[in-house]
Length: 89
Image 1: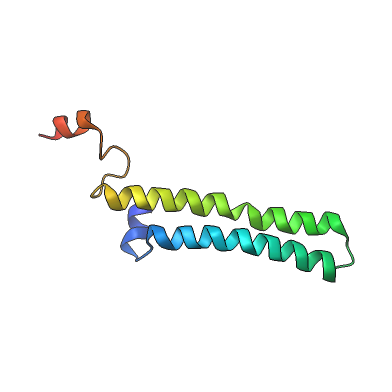
Image 2 (image 1 turned 60 degrees about the vertical axis):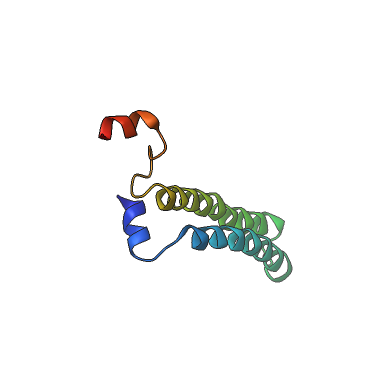
C-alpha cells in the first residue's frame, strides 16, 4: 500500500498539509512572477498558476490519507467501522 510505504519512510500527514499550503503560495508567486517577467502575457501566467495550483488538492488528499492511516493503527480505510471491528474478533 502506498500510504503505508510513505508513512514508513517518514512522511507524516503534517508534511503533506504543509506542502499543500506551500503550493498555494507558490501558485500565486509563480503567477505573479510570470506576469511580470515573461513576455508571453497573462495567458501563460495563468497556465503557470493553474499548473502549480493543481498540486494543492493532491497534497491535501495525501495528507488526509496519511492522517487517517496514522489514526487507524494500520487500517487506513475502515479502522472506525464497528462492523469491521466485530468481524475481526
